[in-house]
Every structure is written in structure tokens, then in C-alpha cells.
Length: 554
Image 1 (cartoon, rainbow, N blue to C red):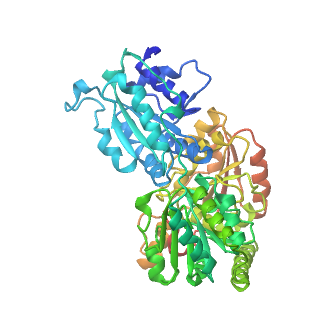
Image 2: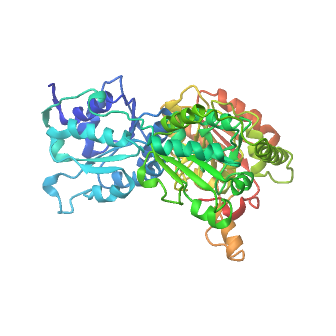
Image 3: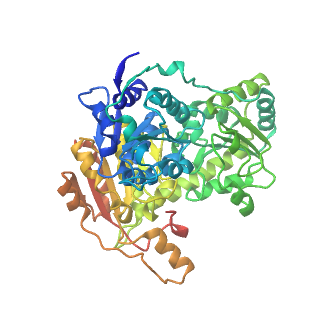
């Protein structure tokens, strides 16, 4: 076994897992780990301007690349700043390894400088939170961290490294190849339940397929489309997972969920069998109560996490398994019985709803007035977005319009904030661009969310990561103002803002800045930004009275 410092053993473990980037802010309690990055070409430490940004970058890198993301922070305040980003990673099922230094074990419970009991803080928002008890166990516990993060429903792991276990400590580090300590499983589901699901689908008159994040994660888009085509099943994507299916497909109607297309709710209310693949069916209890899903609908749920099956609504068939493998099993069972076709009238109904949605969105391209509508902004964006473009929505009213107004053809090209927290999009765009360097990456923000993490523009410029940030500026916290308007009789508190010129702010950071007050110019400006070799910020002043129904979520 090679002999190395404890800090270098941590970095060797990251490199062994194929990690190419680590995001963070160097701090006194993990200098031994930081030293392990010195002079290396196989992993790059990227200094961020806030630890929350580091966690968001790691999360987006993981979601777009499918590989683990890494973030580092010093103990106490640095680690606490990771919370918002790791909370998002946890809700998005992003495999992030979060590493923190910590006050030494010798000073525990003495309220030493930057002392904080990290593990209880991170336990609710990670798959595993642990503290290293002995330096000699670093290789073993790093292997365990990656095993947990990448198994089943993926998610973040937090590891605390007490300073006095690391300083000037040399260990025998047995760095093993990943294939000998974690196996990638693709469970195909219980055969009896697969046959039952196939039988239900064969008998259904109005079947509907809902594809969630599990479809994207398992690479099951093709299998979902094949099954839909076999039985002429209309398809929708679950909330925030718009890229799980090719949106241009004839059977795809639109995104489902609270900010999705109204036409999909019309479809689901008529469905008699719903095949939900790779989705927790969050919110389905509300949809059943509201009539957006028929109470008589028989639901088939395919999930990699057993605790999620039937958690949010009763299911007729619950199948524990990998989305791709289970879909292949269902396809095999259907073909064995000669299944084909489907009800032509049901398919026509879905096609009519798809056309109705497209007509509605196309009409928004003709919206005019003295102020720019955010809906018109999306109509202009659709003219220039390519199938390879990665789109990232922040939280807030203007960004909320994007759930129903962006088209996706390729998996791993859409990210949105699962917690509804502001300030998410700019750092996530940096991580996404590093994961997919040859694709345009566009972050869509309102003015409120933009200033939460605008400092990470400096990170993007310094590290030569050319992202595009579009800021729709209405000088308000739009979601909250819309809700105050709807629920409190226009009694507005804390919702109005003043802002600098964001294009000028971008230029101070060394980025390109654009101010677009004529919406007809937006598509051309976005094209220019796509060709830039440095990050760009495009500010568009928009109508503060044009907000999604109910506020916009976040």
C-alpha cells in the first residue's frame, strides 16, 4: 500500500473515482486536503466566491454528467454555507461528495473557533453524513461515501474531517478501483408485477405515460418512447423533468405539474391507466382531489426507491426497479402477447391537446405592448435554443413561466431548483458548462434571484467557463407579490426592489453585458452570446404585472 499524507489520500480517492473538478473556498481546517490538489493535472480545484455556489456547481456537474460532483468547505461557517446547495442536491437526487474540515477532536465541546457539530446539521439533507474517526480509515470511508452517493436513488454525502486527524498525518492508503467496492445494479422488477403491468396496459382504453427523473438517470428515454409507440400511449413529463422525453415526438403532449401545461391536466383527468416511470408522483394526492387525475385511474408506478412506491398516492401496481430495465421487461411482456396499436380516438385526443398547447405558445410570440411580457421572452428564446442547449431555471415568477415554454429533445439538458430557492441558476450554469463544455448553457433568472449569487460571475470569468445568464428584471420579488395580490388584497410587504444595470455589473466582472429593451432583438443577442468565449449577461426589463397564476413557485 502506498504511503501518503491523510489529505493527499482524500484527493487520491476523488481522482480514483474519476472526479475531474472540485469546487470550494480554501479554508484553514482543510489545508491538508487542499495541498493534495497542488500540481495535479487530473483534477482541478475551482475556487468559488461562496460555498453555496460550490455546492450548486457540484450538483449541476453531477446532474449533467452523470458522474459525482465534489465540493469543499472549511469548518463552521464555511460548512454551514453549503446547506442551501446540498439541500437542492438532495431534493434533485444529485450525487455530490461534500467535504468539510472541522475543529479538532481535542477541542470538541469547548466552543473553539469555527467549531460546529456538522453531522446533525447535514443528516436531514444528505443520504449519509459522517465524521472521520481515524485518519487510517479515510480510504475505506471515502469508498463508502461514493458507494452511498451513487447507489439506487442517488444523492449527496457529507464527510467531516477533524483538523487534528489530518495535520502532518501519514497513512498507508489502499486506493482500490471502484468496480471492486461498488456494483452498479439495474433491477428489472418482479416478473409477476411486470406481467400484471403489461396486462393493465394492454387492456387500457386511455393509457398515459408519465416520465420522471428516473428515466433520464437510467438512460431510459428510448425505451419509454418505444413503449408509447407500441400502444399509442400519450406521454408527459413529470414536474421539473421536462428533458426526460423528446418534446418534439408526436405522442408527447407537454410537461405535467403545477407549472406545466394545462393541456396535460386535461389528458390525465381522462386517463384510465397511468404508467408512471421514475417518478415519486409528488403532488398526486392533490391531483386526485382536484380531479386532474381520475380517482378510478389505475396507477402503475416504477421506482428505484422502495419507500417512494405508493407514498404520494395509491398504486395498482408498484414495481421496484431501474426505469430502463423495467421498461425493457414490460416491452418484452407486451410483445410476447402481440400487443400493438391502441385506441386511435385516444391518440387523436392527445394530438389535439398537443396542437392546442402549441397554438397557445405560438400566440405568445405576438404579444406586444409598452412593456415586455416574460412569455414573449420565451417565445423569442425558442427561436434560437438548439437541442444541445442546457437550460437552467432559477426560482421566481419569471423563471416559472419556463416550465411550460421551453422545448427539450436531449436528456440531461434541463435543471430547475427542486426547493424553489433563489440564486440557484448562475452557479449551476457553471457546473453544467464544465460537464458539457461544447453545449450552450443558459441560466434564466429574475432580478431578485440574480443578486443572490451574482458574485459567481467572477468565478466563471476567471476560470474561463462561458455561460449565458438571462435576467428578466421587473424590480420585484414576483412570486411573493403575485400571492400578496391574490390573497391579501394588494397589501404588499417587502416585494419591491431597486436594481443596478445588470449588464454594466457584468462588465465590471469581465463578462459581456447586453441590455435588450426591444424584444425583437433578443434572439439575435442570444446567438451572439452563444458564440462568446467569455460569460455573458443579458438584461431584459419586463412587465411587473405579467406573472404566472398563483405567483410562480419560489
